[in-house]
Length: 113
Length: 110
Image 1 (cartoon, rainbow over the protein chains, first blue to last red):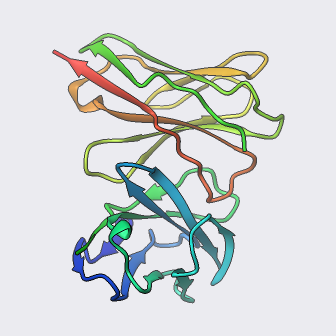
Image 2: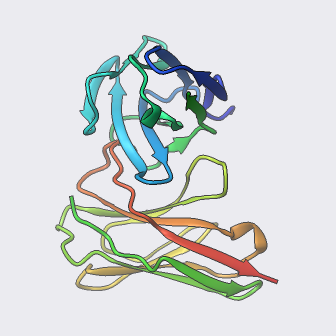
């Protein structure tokens, strides 16, 4: 099976712009989670989607949003970008909401200038 | 969510066993212990998980103390490719919400 794929892999945006990142989970996986990784804060959970519904949410401002489509693909959106949003954004999938193992993608490196 | 404490860094000689400790003294009865690792510039990789019993898979062994307040991840024959940051995580269920700490940077040396 192909692994979790994320597009784009690298992105440069300007403050105030918005950005949409995409994640395709492993085929058959229905749960998708998003994480932000920065040198200062480490890996932080953003949100989890299952069957097109947000099941868990981390402690991030409303500028961060996401959605999941019927084919389990997921997107996350960040509006009004700030310099501090520069980070590696990681997507992880697992088979079902009750599954134990999460499989992570390679991430999207976002740089905000 | 229970918090974990791990050493910041550890060294291990190639071919030897790497034993990575983790303290989770406030763990609840329904919380699982997970281990993930992150090799530089890659996404984290699942290694193993357990609740009460010791567990072993093709990658590693997980030893959980009887009181469940600590655990040890064992890589039986460390290789240079095992150099990574290792995260010990406790989770109240098997949700997709993992709380990562700072982890242990394991350096495997020739």
